Length: 114
Image 1 (tube, rainbow, N blue to C red):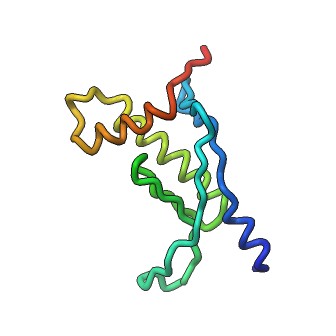
Image 2 (image 1 turned 180 degrees about the vertical axis):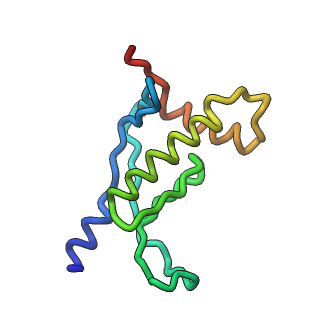
């Protein structure tokens, strides 16, 4: 792969909203996620290269072999975190879960288009 094509793979994602069934998770400002190359995995005999995005404050560690796969993983991870933290009552969350929930609620909200 040419160097320029590899650099294009590292362009930031700008996320304004993620659909979640009949609602959307809408960000107040774009969520900017910048991929990087995942370190080589000594257990991966194919030596595939993976792109990764990490945002521990949002419980995101998403990866993929290309931008499309990474984009799908990011959306899935955001949906899962929203379901597992934001939509759960505080009294059922761990202290770390409450931090993740607060981090999402500081940058996004649920919007229904019905």
